[in-house]
Image 1 (cartoon, rainbow, N blue to C red):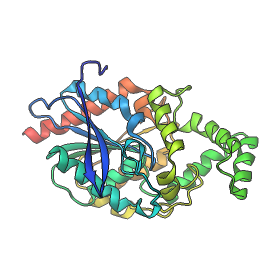
Image 2: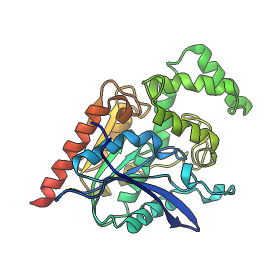
Image 3: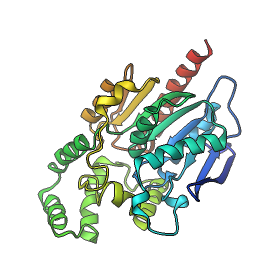
Length: 305
């Protein structure tokens, strides 16, 4: 599935006195289809690593990306850590929809983006036709527990390096980053070297880590930010839209994490990608697009009845 023939439009949306950068791939929907709005992860990453999702534009649906405020092309000129909250980003989803006239949408959130997508769905917004939760937890407590199980399987010298720098508060050291890379290569993206569009997101996160450090912390399992106690497991039953959960067999969002989300959302289904970790859309791209297109098509056909 290629995106060579899909026209792309970029622009910005005024939000909170700043500008949210957005990109629309494709011109319009075919009759009976709805656009796909994509929410990137991090928190604090860029949309770039999701670029393979633009292939959905070949199925007769526009695909909309944006960099969340404080991230990438939506960075702000000053430090403002108290600004980065779940509520801010819920509001931004609505602002993007309003600005682009997205009355009825499919919503896909990856990692933190899926956490945000679930939070947004809990506001019961009109016109939300489907939800795809890609490698996302419903509890950061469970996320850390599972990440530490994966961490325990790393080589002992890697574990010691991580522990030493976390205890010393030197998680910004190159040695810590190198040890983390071993974890990333196993459980975040198993295509090594990473695709260019994935590398761009990591580079952008390194260049501007404030949102990630504020909400998450210095690494995937050293979560000391404002999200450390975030949990919505007991509210998942309030989500009332058709939902697809996706994850990878080797995902840092482990099968237990994905199952928790699937079991909590009424009627949700779960697709696991056997050759993937945290970025199935970049690791098993063709199959991922087929699964997403089939799910979206099923929802659209049901809506037309």
